[in-house]
Length: 187
Image (cartoon, rainbow, N blue to C red; front, side, top):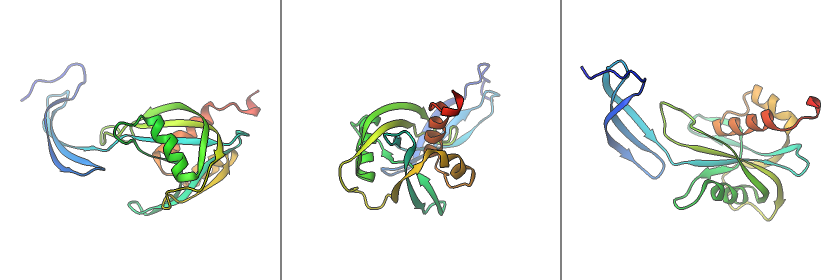
């Protein structure tokens, strides 16, 4: 039996690829748990993603798309964003995606938080940005991203509670904004 780990680290003795596409790589890793138990564990790797909470100049509305996702067969509200292209920074990706998906250009873009959507099951770093202010610069060039609309920020908690926001990146972004945005009733 392999030696146990006193510091709680899972040891990877090797990993082999089973399937690869531009969107997902599936593998099997030979791992040893801290207890010493050894087995093969699946690995799923996807490209990094970048998304943004676009807030209007008043700070009272966010830009959301109502769209269908065929894999889980759900309709839900989502933020603009996409996969980070090779050679592109997450900030460049999200600035580009906002324009392509919504027709708006962010006035100010700041990093909010990075997260892994399914730690332990998936490798896919997600970068969340807050886009403060937006200027309409044209029509969206991506036709299949749903219909974007300005939604009152005050409606967002109710949309989340009603199960109308299911995308993990959208939830993280909106909850981050709600948690850290200045609120009149706190003053």
